[in-house]
Figure 1 (cartoon, rainbow, N blue to C red):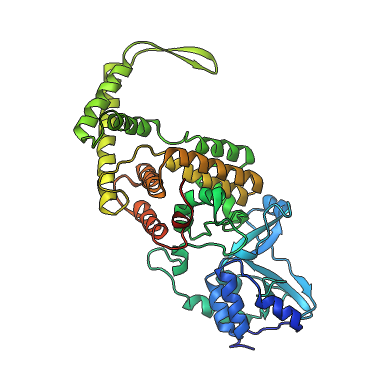
Figure 2: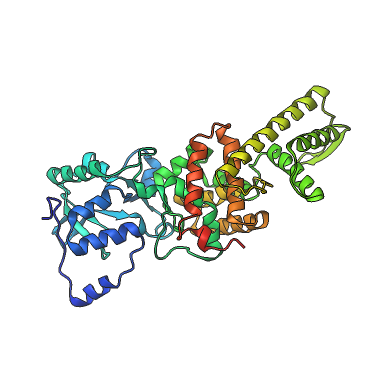
Length: 431
């Protein structure tokens, strides 16, 4: 019974064995499960499950009506002549569009070991119908053994994740590996590495339907398809990046273009002040949804406040760039021209999050990813150029010059993406 885990597998003829031998596992999790199965090493099999995301199917309509609940539906399997709960790993999930009312929630093995109320169901089946399919008994004694694998699993001291979740993770078959779609997914790879998710999964489920909806609600206040469309469009147009950031960087960009060479910080500050003063004089007439609006000149107090704010921002940007150069994010003679990357990277991420929450179709998700790719290629010259700009936007938004986790986490992801031979930043051309 394999170290107490217990297995039951059906017999297979030679043609089935040949098919299994030729199987291309969709990802590292499934490949490791398959190899452990071939060896009959059920302890190793559960070591893999202990650090994997495990998914169970549920009804979208039911979950929308009862979002805090979780239903486990068993099915009869003749192989063991019993009701079994089917559990899938991430690479075995069907495309989100395959069945409109079937979604998947994600739970760790720890949950199945300690909290799952199995009732009359005394078996689980991992990845049914696949070459890595295995049936296991799920009695309290067996579940106690599963918990032992969870407790022995190695985790990172900093984030609590298994070590492999802090590295580049990818599907090995049936996913985007080249071309413009892969390029667009590469824009969100900093987020994918930081969140321990597959960077190249187009048919995205993320960490499950409930978790993806919660992510969008908690971080973006998105609770509907219409709201998702609104934010997706704004990100693709780089409308969420601060106009003050872009103005400030634009002043330096113009100076570098007109005069060439390095732009001294003091000169940048003086020119920014002059431009702000020039733009604040005189009455403006702006065309808006309600027609032409008259805008009176700013008061001297308002102008001084704007100048002081931009001066502080210039100092922040200069200090961040100095740190970026020290950490290898920027070349010694390079500077960041625009932080639109902050929106383009999140736009690629938003396209997948919307699919995971079922606020869009897979086709709509892919279309948004392609648009993000086109916009980023127009604005930037390389992956490194894009990355530095994205990280600056993230830091200006979250970090407040603390150089804490908001910076360190994404710096670590940048280093993974610029050194891992399988990284899209090394395998997918920028232009």
